[in-house]
Length: 187
Ligand SMILES: NC(=O)CC[C@H](N)C(=O)O
Image (cartoon, rainbow, N blue to C red; front, side, top):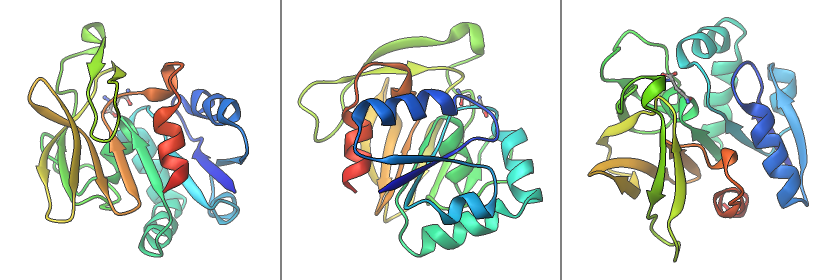
């Protein structure tokens, strides 16, 4: 199995390290349609969603991603990745998104970079909570019919699944807990 990690900007190297520590998969950095063609599933990391969205649109990677998602490719967006996968950014409605997850999000919902924090987040299907690292994190403000809520923090939805598509507000790649990476690889 080859896992693509979008490597345009952001903390993609942390996801690549996490995948190597889980083992048993090949990893490809995805910057172009050609890179994407080598991948069986895809992680979109944390970063700056405005910048990465513009570059994805410009290089035609966005269209290719939409096509692969429609064909059933498992994809997981963490923080920026979930923002890019959403239908609409509530507090920035002109922002380019891929519209893969039938959700709306609010960006920077817990405040600025200096308000970054870690805390325990209980998730459906996991016995023990994960350590959620929230860095200018979004929350999900609307869930479409086919979208399952996987977890909340302070009453806000911070993890969702829609078929093979996964979104988390926080950054599991910045912890040593690999349960979510394993879960994603099992989809
Ligand atoms: N850690 C992150 O990915 C931050 C996301 C960033 N606040 C954005 O809106 O793009």
